[in-house]
Image (cartoon, rainbow, N blue to C red; front, top):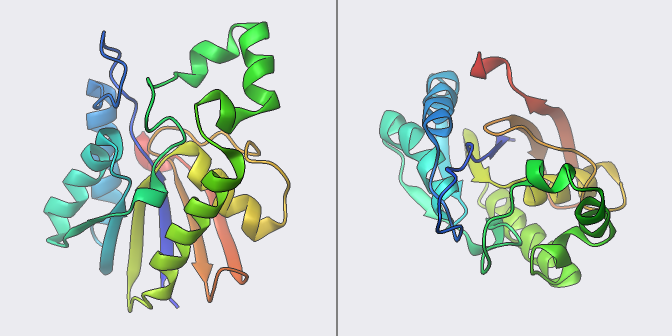
Length: 190
């Protein structure tokens, strides 16, 4: 059973066009750290969200491993059709943070049930491919939360706040047999 590395995208750049931002300089640097950390492992497949920040985070590892990047729509964040929301900014405003916490997926413009179903379907696609070696999935905070919450039997979609370029590891026999190995690893970013 292959290990699946769930990697949150790198820090996005702040720009006047907030829709689907690319990476900041720190995000680019951290994506190289992820590649250096994971690049020495046998990797069967690399998947990513179709959003620019996830693809740019994946690029150094794709280059280092020579493995094709497979895009899966279900790995995208709930804000995929709206301007990117910096969670750090939302947390500093008590009124906005309360709105965010009451319905985080809706706050970002998504439908809760549809979004959760889409994420779990994408994860099932990754898992069901029965890869021989490790698999790396470049995605976003909410998809990582949804997979981990599903595996651990937790309610809600905001149980963890994954750091930019953090790694969470799982092994999965199927969608209902996911073993969580680690959550929010960041030692590779130092």
